[in-house]
Image (cartoon, rainbow, N blue to C red):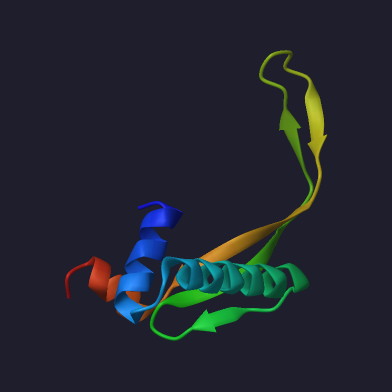
Length: 92
């Protein structure tokens, strides 16, 4: 499913225009992104939780030359599915 497909489904389910559904989806994604970037958790009960995890700096190897390289620490977005969402996917 693409973003356009999701907007179509949202517009149909909420009985609103596609433009309004697109703005709502963009607003939700923007709000989640800002919160996670700041380090906050975003919990949507029954669906899941968006959060930030940290990966430590580590050593890696360049596969072409075999040279050891340093990989910098990074912050990563993380999503943990909620029980209701997991059950729906597993047909429970």
